[in-house]
Length: 288
Image 1 (cartoon, one colour):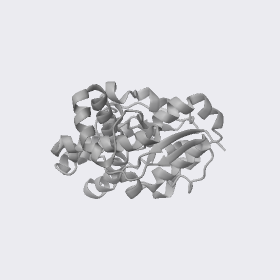
Image 2: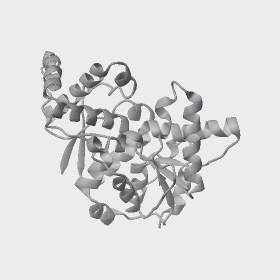
Image 3: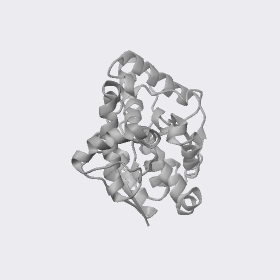
Image 4: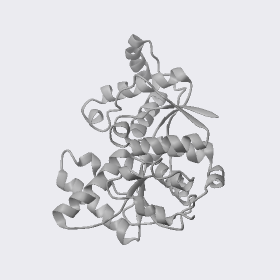
């Protein structure tokens, strides 16, 4: 049994209980113990980082210091949280002077960043600690080659020397369910979630271009591992239908939902009914 400190962030528990529920079910099936990390704050991505870099670094260093106490790696299902934690971890591991200044501030709470707890994304834990072979052995209802497009999200892959995650991680995790990964031209493009508060028109265009690229490439479903990306690609489909009469009808599913179904969990256990664009059509593609 492997134990991890779980940092949920803000968006998943507030908006996506289906992501949280499916992740916990998947973790349980592979004997991964996810212990909720208490007394943590928002990671501040991306707004705090843009307005107050020191404050952003400090709040994430505090979260990492709390995880250090547990001596377990800190795991998150959110790309934004993962990116913030990884960036600050990398900064403090490589900049001794900055780490010293941060720890002076943390000392007021009796905390210290030591770097014992490594920040990790949940899918990387599945890929590295569980492994594709172990996952494959537990698949009881494989997908019948259905086309799934992957939206990786900016903070999962970039910068690569910091995140240490390649596109192959998620693509191989999708393939192990029996699905076919649909390649599409705009796979690297941002979904537009972070620009939505400052330029709504640009955010809508980015989402539209991305959805169109996926659809034209033959995708029947899309998988994501980020709540902000899900909100953008899922919700904007409703807006595009109302404003422009464009229908993409592309269900956006979190990866643990897809894997959970392939492991034999029912639709309620993975919260399939909570997706805005109806996702239940995926059920007909699973082998009996």
